[in-house]
Amino acid sequence: MSEKFTEGQVLEGKVTGVQPYGAFVALDDNVQGLVHISEVTHGFVKDIHEFISVGDEVKVKILSIDEEKNKYSLSIRATEEAPKEQPKAKQSQSQPKVQQEEQGFNTLKDKLSEWLKQSEEDKK
Image 1 (cartoon, rainbow, N blue to C red):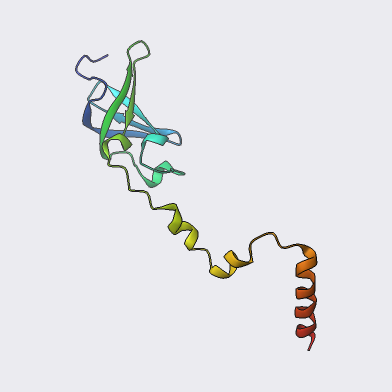
Image 2 (cartoon, one colour):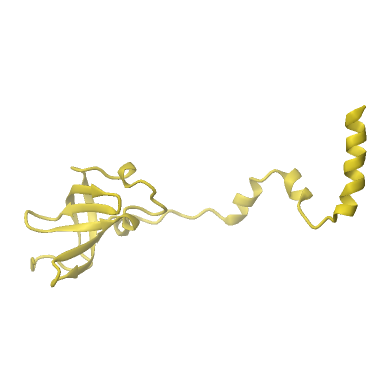
């Protein structure tokens, strides 16, 4: 292994391979590590190819080094600022008001007369 790299270090690397589970990044001519798909970006990544390609220059942070297995665990996500989450209240407001009012615990008996009335009106 190389003595010049340490855990927590942030540096530039070049993507040498992309697999469904992650991307291999060369840190120098002798050392390369893996950026797991969960460490590519903030949020869910369904298809890694939408975010990264062979030949891309990327900034990575070394998460861990396993000297015995000669493995470097890297993260691109750790070098980026996390996006600000939108308040959950705004997401629920996107639902139409009509649906919000109709949701609840109405019994069938309560609704049956209303449905019969609507059915009769539709026949006319």
